[in-house]
Length: 115
Image 1 (spheres, rainbow, N blue to C red):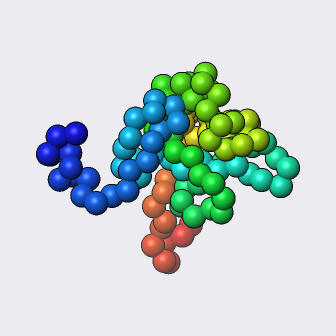
Image 2 (image 1 turned 180 degrees about the horizontal axis):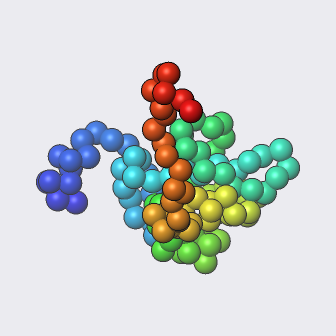
């Protein structure tokens, strides 16, 4: 780690990605938790406040693929194997910019000028 990296991250806690096994600041990784109550689903903890043991993953498709290949979810979160929610979170969806825009006016008429 260089001096510039240390200064830019400050005193942020570091976590290790379960995919690539590299350390990074907590703010750059997703926190994952097991759903619990008999379910095997893994959930993304957006606010980083959910109860239970957490695992950390870079929000990239390559780290997700490595974590699945290494079966890291089951080791980091015992009993958790369902990664559909994490895959949905990380993989890009349809491009929003490419969607056709409706030609409806968004400006409301002024009061008294309605037809």
